[in-house]
Image (tube, rainbow, N blue to C red; front, side, top):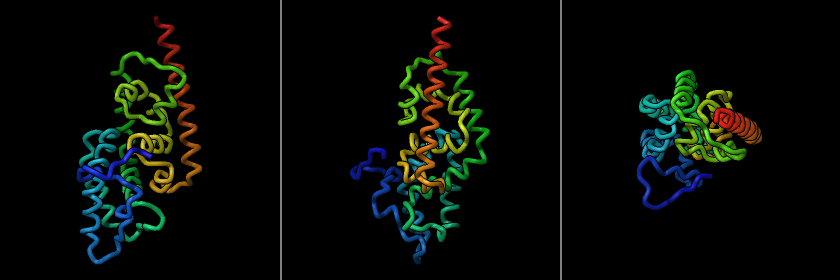
Length: 204
């Protein structure tokens, strides 16, 4: 799970999935206020995640995510998962309408990137934490080639900072499926890193 702090946090940055505040009762008499607290707690980090995937569309998607959250608040079961995972699940479902734009952006980043430098462990490092802009640009082509579900698992883990249990909650799939997808992604990224490294060496 990503590193988290309980002190000095700003509104929208408090993505603490272990805090009782992230399992609110949305069926109470003031659901608007409860969802508003979730917005203050998660909106900024959710926006960062969406912006990395679809750029300027993030503004609209954040608003839509919390609108859907309010409209479907009775479907949230705090006994089954955190509100944080639930919100990222809503956002990921909304992202599915913009997969083509995301893939186009990744391919554009690939064309704009310089020659890749990598080693056999590069894919593992990126799979564990895809948060270095240069590494992301170098592997943008590999990300674009991933199956939609595999890409969601990787980026929810690496960019959103969810752990495997939260990813499973967000996507509505078993934890074992999350782990198998991550394993498949690591193999793909290792193969891509190895191929691009051989191509770079052959061009020298």
